[in-house]
Length: 147
Image (cartoon, rainbow, N blue to C red):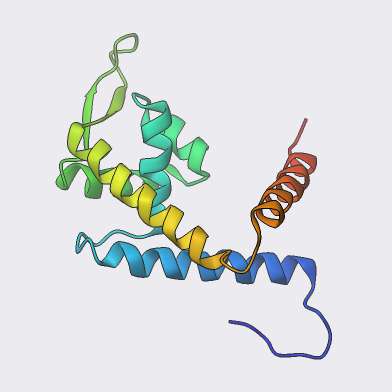
């Protein structure tokens, strides 16, 4: 929701509004897949595409979710054939999450949808402005990282 006002929004509110708008656009785009996926599934697949195989706890930490939320996420992705839970190679008490070929193919489709949303959202910016925005936001993010 964008609050009309004569004064500029606070930095925090503006970041939240941008994030919420991007999530809404991405959720709407992913709905076209007709799989019942949302932004959390997008983030989960994105991280799994980079770090799988991994444990559910590792995934939970990487996407900043509680383990019960990750279990629900994995249940959905497993039902779609996107992931498999397999015995961990080094720890027989643990399971590791493996991204299947179907999961990789779905990620590639969702990744394209994400890129399209970003392109749409930043359509009024030049290439130099996009690069500058990314650089500034990266610096802010990095300054907030705990040492």
